[in-house]
Image 1 (cartoon, rainbow, N blue to C red):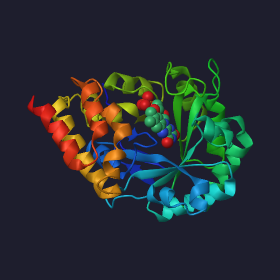
Image 2 (cartoon, rainbow, N blue to C red):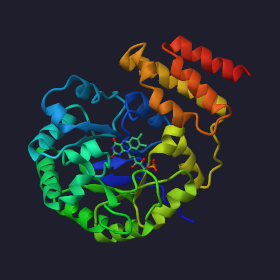
Image 3 (cartoon, rainbow, N blue to C red):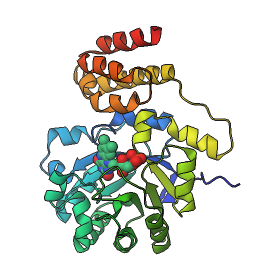
Length: 324
Ligand SMILES: Cc1cc2nc3c(=O)[nH]c(=O)nc-3n(C[C@H](O)[C@H](O)[C@H](O)COP(=O)(O)O)c2cc1C
């Protein structure tokens, strides 16, 4: 059978493959993205960044824009509900070297939705269209939009919303095929993906629950041009290579627990370079739970990592574990 892994074009961008890293707040920083790039991701999305904060020159948000020179295929994701600040933020992303700008229209977090941003844009199709149009006019790089398959459980909204985005100038849409109401859990709606793929000409990036090559294949079968992986990449940034190898019929190799620990220590070093010796460790706390998932004694190891305040502490914790 022909492999679904292929070079893909999004606007004027040509990407080496169609397995992407999903945007993940407090996880998808430069250090983590570099590992996913090494792990074979064809395109990478940053964690979401507030357009308003960029507009008001918030230091922390500007820090989140940092990208390594080798990040040629990293898109920056922005969220907001004002077309002017979204357009301005998109210009900033372009200046900072983003390969594309991604509009968050799928975040179910209450605080984000209360401000009219994230998934709330799906309730306001006119504003969604205006924002996509404004952002598109502001930049030369491709514009993508991340949607949900529906707002409420049992409905399908993504085909019409993807059309709205396409008509307003979007170069691709991602559909996280779960309702806004179901958050990040619940069944993935393949029917919604099928209908969305039929509704638009631009590439559809499918997302939700992909952990294996079979999961990815199901999304390609539903008509997706690319597949985006979130939590399974936070557990193993080399998942992209593994899925690609398996779908290309090559022998694939699982990352061993020891290799995962070595990789995590590499990540910590990069994170400390990015945030400094203390915050590099503290800011890895969100990721560690995903990373250690399914490893022997994961709960104990995670608990002792939470106490670490320096790279040396973390190294000691992990070395003790690998020497057991
Ligand atoms: C910790 C965490 C942070 C996330 N942050 C974002 C975000 O900043 N922007 C976004 O569009 N989606 C965000 N998501 C959603 C993911 O991009 C993805 O859509 C979701 O996890 C489903 O994919 P998965 O089943 O492969 O994890 C986040 C998910 C998680 C678990």
